[in-house]
Every structure is written in structure tokens, then in C-alpha cells.
Image 1: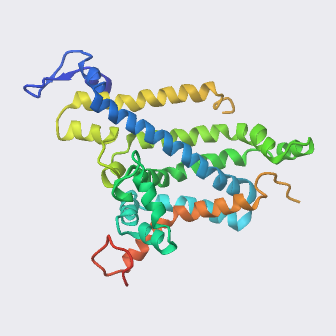
Image 2: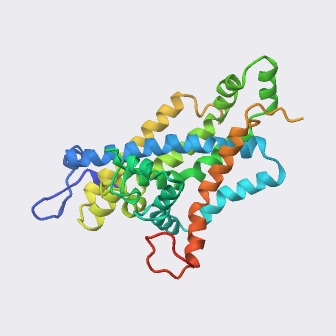
Length: 264
Length: 48
């Protein structure tokens, strides 16, 4: 249904959908304005995925391999608790935090690091008048939102790494970083792949965070929402929603080639 | 005896705890705002 719609095109004069198979709508995707949206969304998704993996790894490692008993239970509940809170409440809470004279800037000025915040906001690509209207702020909110979806699969994967392998590696004279690189990381790869599929696809599809926080540039989700709701351009909306599908298919192929699913 | 190679560092436990704290920032803010009567919500440092 979605695919067939994306092969139709809208008549630009009468704004009705011409039900004849054509590639015109896909050609529209390659207009500079639309290509910009695709690139912006993909770039954000990649950045969010990489940094949430970096933040999630210590947490998952700690809760799966180091913490015991109560601390471990506390961590599992603690990671899941933000997921029980309404998505919109969290987004708007972040908007308050990142606002021009909000909590983040108050914190920075109390610690005496206002100049650092100003310097970060002055960076051309990611900055803006305030954190809540810059790509930097949007990035923080995205990372925050999808962090649990990265932590939980990673922790599940790390839990299954047998301690005997780590001990054997240490007995054979491997340093910590060697054990990490050659034993733990390859065994955690399925979890990393699962988590990154979550964060990547959720960032590609989201339209609420880019609306509430961040710079005015459009994202794919917003574009889909607008073209089918306001503009009535269902073919363009369908073509836009094919983009994440293609991107995720490419990503899955790359992940499989790297051997992320060998251990499943 | 726990001979966990990776997780024995002080750094990793600090990183883990601060990551967990990061996850709870908006929760705390929401609770804080639930108990304030101030209307100028976009300005921080108001009294309850």
C-alpha cells in the first residue's frame, strides 16, 4: 500500500493524486530541499546512535557484570523507570531544561562555565540562539530518549558473556584493553546491533522531538506528517517513509556483514 | 573472589552511576515543577 502510493504523483496544478505509476515522486526526493532533510535526519541518527552506544556501554557493563544483588536490581529498575513516564512529559521537561534562561544555562552560570555554553552554541552547524533551539539540544534529547533502548539489549548481551572466558583471557596474559577488544566486544556485538537498530530507526522516524526542541530544519518524520496531513500529498509522504526503510535495510546488511547476527 | 577484568575500574562505576543519573533528570524536573506555583516556567530559580 505504502509502496504503491509512493509510485503515484500529485498533480501540482489541481493537487489531486494521479494514479499512474511514475517515478516523479522519487525524483522529488532528490531536490536539494528534500535531500537536505534526508541528510540532516541521517546525520542526526548516526550521531545519536554512536553516542548513545558510548554512554550505554559503561552502564550496561556495570549492571550486567559488576553490580550484584540490590545494586543490580536498582539499576534495572532505574533504567526502565524513565520509560514508564510519558514521552511528551519528558520532551517538554527537556524543553524547560534547555530553554534560554532555563535550568541548564542557570547551572552553567552557577558553576561559572557560561562562556563554555556560549562557545558551544556559537559553533555554526550545531549551535543556535539557545540550547532548546539548536541541533545540540535536539541531539541531547534524542540521546536521552533512546538511551534505555540501547542499554537493555546491551546488558542482556553482556550478561551472557561467560566470566570464564574473561578469566582465561587474563590468565593468558591479555591486558584489560586486549580482553575488552578481543573477548567482550565481539560477544556484545549482537546486543550492540540490536540497540543501535532501535536508536537509529527511532531517530529516523521521530517527528515530535524535532517539533518541540531544536532548530527549525525539518526531519523526515515531520515531512511525512506534514505532506500527508496538511498538504494532502500522500505520494510524497510515502516516498519519504520509504527512505528510512531503505536506510535501515542498508544498515542491517552492513551489520550482518560485520557478523553481528552470527551469534543469534 | 571476583576477578572481573573490565568492571573493576573506578572510572566505569562512576560512568555507570552518572549515566543512570542522566536518565532521571527530567523525572526530577517534572516532580519539581509539579510543586511550584510560579507561572514563568521558562525561567529557572523560582520558589515553591
